Length: 184
Image (cartoon, rainbow, N blue to C red; front, side, top):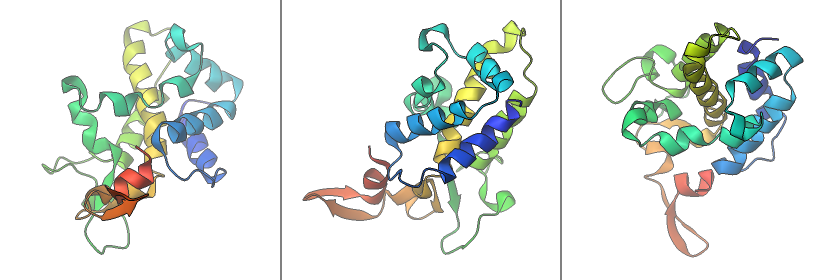
């Protein structure tokens, strides 16, 4: 099994785990643990080779990294990759219509990111150390985004801004739907 299969396994693992209510750190960690446990030996070895030594081959230890770096200057370009906005009242996702950032740059949504990073990883060959850092980042982004795309609040209407414009009260505190559903 190749790294290309990681995307499928991450997707499958989410279907098998309906009890996950909020994503936050725990949801991403669980997604990566399940997916990594389902890898065949060849793919598991490739994942281990791409991970830094300090995590002892545990992909789940770095699954929240894309959320941690998305506001850093170097990774600011990744912010729009965490979600998909569809036109208000549209009942379906259309890649050509919906996968772009706020400036109209195409492929800048979570579905485009999954496609891009899966493609990058499908060309990984062990021993290409000059590209290892880029491949490690591709693996971490892919694993994280497979969790994001399955979080309903991350694929929604443009006007609700991922639930940020839907105010509510949560245990006597003012909040919004995004904050409550994601668990941050």
